[in-house]
Image 1 (tube, rainbow, N blue to C red):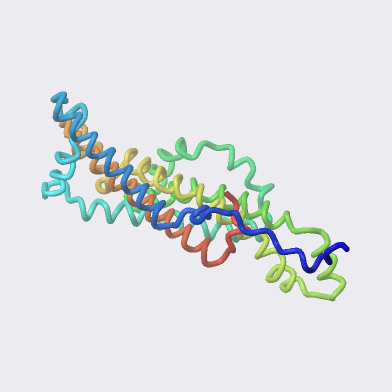
Image 2: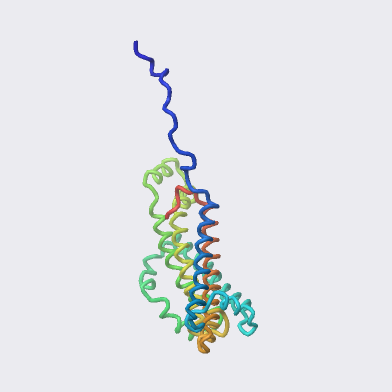
Length: 263
């Protein structure tokens, strides 16, 4: 007599313990460990081969530049941070508003203009300082956010649109419950791209014409072959970009589920 299907025991779970996803703390520990190992290797190589500091300074020499009061690290970092975050915020607001107004056809030609080449003209029109550098940063951040947001708004499934219309939903309800949630992954994708451009825009503006900021400081110390100070300025600029990117990732985690994020 055959055994009823319900009486057949289920197969044992053969998965090995620990075969799941790697814990977050383990991934972070690996990343930090790799960075520390690279810094130690860098220090050893410079000291063993006696590389000149103006060619490749040791990490210890780079850190030592923080104690030099003539570099005014705090004030220059603060100025660059204002330009990066100010230009990025302005580009984010203008990009989202432009996407909602669907002004992409008007701005296609402007998007083809090389933004860095407009830097000297912006300096001529608005003098030099924090304000013009914010405008340069804004010009680089605006279009990635605008174009990705417009794409997200246009990616709404037709079935959802028909459903809202069948339920006699208003235009605001269509945007609030259908288009806005669907466009968020594309918006954050553009925001991530804009973080890199924001840092580049601020530094380019300070290279062109400025009397303060980390980019301005790099030009000054480069003339005296103070390579350790140049490295420190690059590290601080990189830190500003990492902070901005981290804020974008935090907002993405708050507003978008993991399955809906664009990688």
